[in-house]
Length: 285
Figure 1 (cartoon, rainbow, N blue to C red):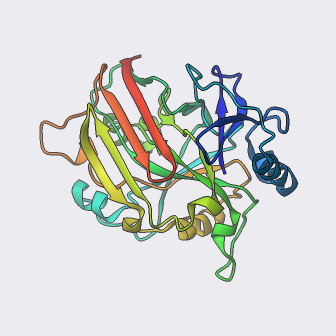
Figure 2 (cartoon, rainbow, N blue to C red):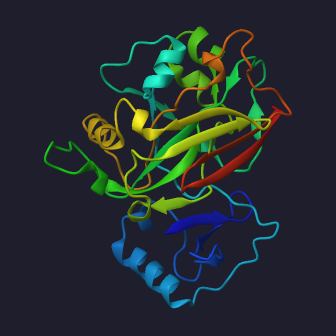
Figure 3 (cartoon, one colour):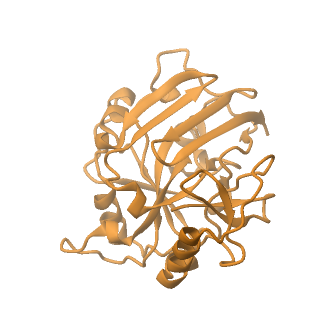
């Protein structure tokens, strides 16, 4: 299923995109697309049954804003330097263990919402990523458990990053990762059964129409299953938590000088195969 949330920011309602590309209203069945829903197999079953019966009312998509596909996000766990080609382009050694940092849930905006260049920024960068959405509580997963059984679905994430804040201003990466609007998410949350193998997805990103990133999740140093298992050793993953799993090569930070960092007026478009496409215009904060 392709689940999404539509409407004005802060007042989105749940919806479904059916197999024919028709937007369907879910507000008569569920209150929201969130962790509580993803953990409720009975509720998900009601959505599937209603979608299959054709009883869900259609929505007019014309002019309707698409919001983040997940409400009430618990935490956003991010994995850095998780693609072999990205590590090579930045001159970094592939990490021996996953590099873990956080983004605050309030960085999340819709897939086509404006992204703000922070005040004082000269190194705002792009990163297309596969986002993993947790559907079951995962703690201390063992080697004989399947981490993918704890995944509700997947989405496109744009891990916008300010490299000077992240790398040159001391401390952790968090200052360069948590600026306002720095995590566009969506357009859809695609359930895991529809996605199949998360290590066989293409990711692409364009800036002002020029292709910058063109990679595959097969290049991940730590595959999705390993990431979920690893993170569960250090924190409890709960339904509605999100894991951003890293970006392939092609970011501005890895380009020759002068590096083409983002400026107000730039347009970024990005997609993950089967998970939809985003488009953001950048403006100065």
